[in-house]
Amino acid sequence: MAKILFKKQLSPAVFQFRVEAPLIAQERKAGQFIILQTNKDNGERVPLTIADADTTEGSITLIFQTVGKTTTELSKFEVGDDIPVLVGPLGSPTHIENFGHVVCVCGGVGIAPMHPIVQAMKKAGNKVTIIMGARNESLFLMKEEMTALADEIIFMTDDGSYGRKGLVTEPLKELCEDTKGKPDMVLAIGPPIMMKFCALTTKPYGVKTVVSLNSIMVDGTGMCGGCRVTIGGKTKFVCVDGPEFDGHEVDWNNMLQRMGAFKPQEQEALHRFGANDGHKCNIDKMADAKAKEELEKINALPKPLKPKDKTAIPAQPMPQLEPSYRARVMEEVAQGYTEAQAIVEANRCLACKNQPCVESCPVHIDIPAFIAKIAEGDFKAAIAKIISAAVFARRNASAR
Image (tube, one colour):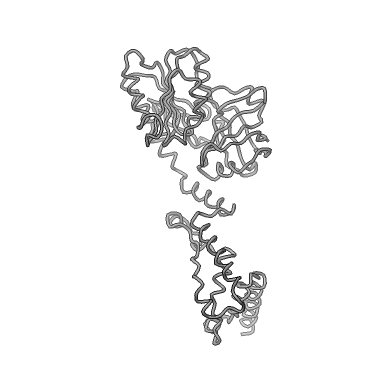
């Protein structure tokens, strides 16, 4: 187990943890990673690159983005909680030497794993230029730390909110074309599509380009083959042969295809976790909030409610699975009312004297009585009404 010593939310979907792991802190090298599980019995094994280490405190720093079920669950851990499984350091470390001029290109959460590499490259005597990319200014990670390390730093944003507007490949190409400042080596870490185009940018100029691949991984020791990639026409395992490879030799199309192999299962796992965790989309939350407001109005009315009061109560929309999700699964579309929605909807019942709902029910359940109990908020009594009717129906069927 590894205790969480520090937690910080860096952006809406990115979190920083400092975790107690003294042995890993002592042994780790730039470019290596750990694998963790949020549940030791059947939890998914997730690789995260070590962003920093403190041997005095005996801790490592992890920075991750919530993209699936496990990282979403991990983001809910708090200071003092234990991560059940955390093993490392894993993978081959970055080859560090004095190359001369090293350009480090990083985007999104790829900025975090680049940090220890920049530290090591600077310590080896390299001139380091950093190109950092993000969709907007708020998504830059470790801006101050990276600025302090770099000889030159270039910020690129999609919307132009900070630094230059455009892609990281634009200044990379400019540097490759600069005869005086041409890089001796380029390292790229970020989304696969970004690394692919960094490699395509440098290839015509003959600049050695190393990328850190983030493929699907299971055991992290080379046994399962889940992280296999094609490098120079040969099969390699990211967990033991990498994670760093020559970007000009990576079969990017094959890797990108493999990265999406389990997308439906990943989305389903995240959806199930969200449902079990009490998560609701914003639309459902708003509907529940409106129902609670309506319930306050109902409670303020004199009892029993008059028909005109009942007809004035707005119908409650039934929460449903999103069409894009339910098209792929066989789950129930209707997700059921919240307590507030159920009570509000039950108060709309007119309790007709001739009880057409009972007459049309195959087992003649006392539906008005059931709804009356829901309107009172007595859900156990409402269930009892259904059970008693169902038992009676079974007895009648047996007698026949």
